[in-house]
Image (cartoon, rainbow, N blue to C red; front, top):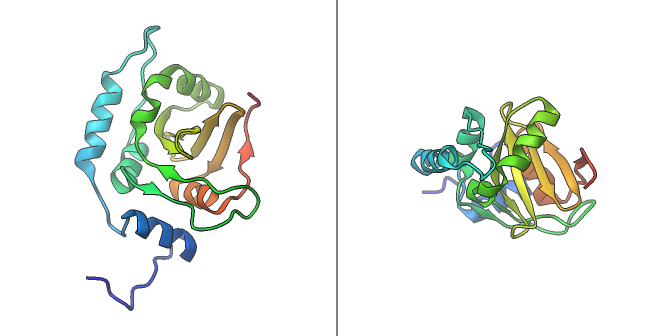
Amino acid sequence: MHDPNQHTSTRFTPVVEKALRTAGWEPGRWIIRQAEEWADALRAHTSPAGHEHAVFPAVVEAWAEFGNLHILAPGPGRQIAPASVRIDPLGGLHLARTLGDLGRALATEISPLGQESEGRAILAMDSEGRVYSIDHTGDWFLGADIDRALNTLLTGVQPTRLTSG
């Protein structure tokens, strides 16, 4: 039952928290079985050229908390159009090489996290929990953690470009 005295957490702005709750998120959400199934599917996949996915605790935790949510932008963007977000790493299953290349460029491991705007970009996370977006225009830094990345995406804050496409 919803506690009327527990309106918001301190992790997210009220507008982002409302969008998350509308999508089915709540504090303490932890769907580890789904996260483990995704981890197994990614570990089992090898590209035709032999590229494999990295799977690490930070991304498994993000999948467990936000997995299978389809989060819609709560309103107009601040600087750019806000994105909808779907946390499901299998959208990046066939991008092991792309994610591996980005990881090497950033001296870290990268794993798929989900998609934004109905698949127009792939969301990825590195082993430190930083979140990136990869689209046809380049690679973008969204935030130092999933909370900041969701704020960037859902409120239309301009992300930082890493590379040009």
